[in-house]
Length: 134
Image 1: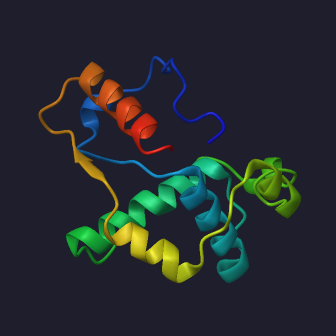
Image 2: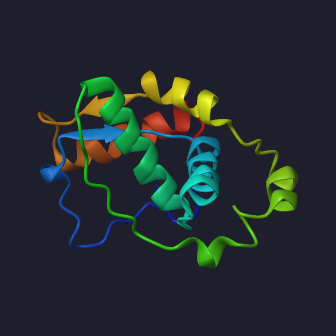
């Protein structure tokens, strides 16, 4: 996903406040974006799709009743990319149906980071993302 998983972090990033991290694929995030646009009229960027995937996975796996999800960007900058069927085809990305995405989110990898250092969290997330093709 564009901009996610960069080798640098902003100085205001404090990974120690995280207690869980969810790793999602580009296919899952883009599918979430497209479903959100089609079903709710919300146009979010790829990182917003990742936020939705992580939030829904957490809700499904931890029997929570609600979650607050902050969308970091708009989808307006991605109309020629994640909202363009020709671009998806060129990149070999097929969209998941709502049911397919739901099945994946029920078993999504959620990492407990409570006992990890800042660097261990970053290293583990990068390793998981590489291993699972995110």
